[in-house]
Amino acid sequence: MYLTDLALTDFRSHRETVVRLDAGVTTFSGPNGAGKTNLVEAVTYLATLGSHRVASDQPLIREGADKAIIRARLVREDRAAVVSLEIMAGQANRALLGRAKVKPTALLGVTRAVGFVPEDLVLAKGPPEVRRRYLDEMSVQVKPSMARTLSDYSQVVRQRSALLKSLAGTSGSQRREGIDGLEIWDGPAARLGAAIIHRRITLVQHLEDKVAELYGRIANGGRAKLFYRPSVEVADGDGPEAIEAKLLEAMTGGRDKEIERGLTLYGPHREDLTLALNGRPARGYASHGESWSLALALRLGEFQVIRDEMADDPILILDDVFAELDMTRRQALTKLVEGVEQVLVTAAVKRDVPDGLASHWHAVSEGQVLADDAASG
Image 1: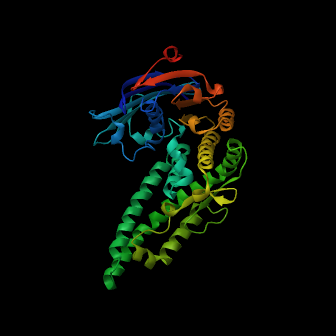
Image 2: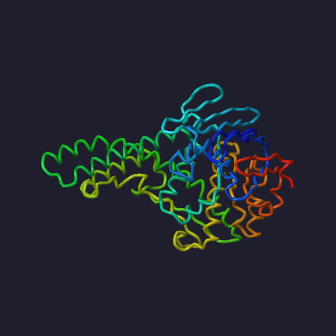
Image 3: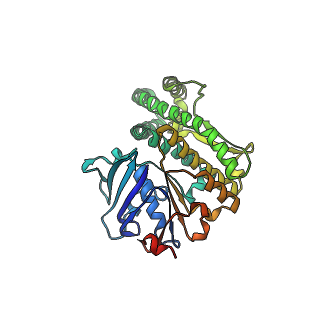
């Protein structure tokens, strides 16, 4: 898969930007604040319907505008698709697939992209919810229907936890009635949660060897390991049905504890992907360089999993990555991305980008993108 055209209207700093793209490597260079990261952020937004930089859509809309528009043309195996997404201020977003109006979620799976951004350092150093989101976004790119499962689960857990909180301090008939109501939510929470847990465990099984190899190559040695920590004991070979039964058992057995805490204590929202380097937890022990290399290995591992599952390259985005890497790691990364169908790179200065990745260049300045010939100097 690769992009041939990207057009932005009132997206971040881009009032009106149109970029023609080719397969292979394209690099956007320019000073901080010029708008180069905004370009690749738009691509990852099309793929995931979210941004790693902000929690809501409002900051994506240029100041003074009432909506932002992302349009793109993609080619996969000689078939083209045109997508358009309107990000609305205070309203539901709107989408087009070709000329047909569709729900924004219908665009999931049309664009597939994996982006490494400086904020990804939190994959190694940050809280569990960051790594849960990493697994869930990967899951949606491989199987778009998981987006509905994740959304439904989030709603069920909110409702169930609200009811648990309301039961704290109750007794007698009021408590019994509340527990009867709670049992209505147990089934959906267990069923949806089990589907998410099973999918995450499957992804980690596909990831672990890839990340170990990638980390060793990027960091020139060292051992990286991944461990998924479910909230209930899951045996090898457990399918969704077995996990669902264990979640239901945990909820029933832990009823008093959950009411006391006012929280749903069992399920994928309480779990973590833990990372280890050389036998020690990455979080709290890894150096800055080790954390950077591990985060990069996780993103490249994600790329490989999606490639294997879909038999197609997602778009690979490397946002301001080379400035943080020494020459050895730059060369290792260059070799790792050889042959990828499309790579979009951003860099503050050209000299940060290895010669092996010097292909199509665009200069970016104040939300404007210059053509190759204008950027070649």
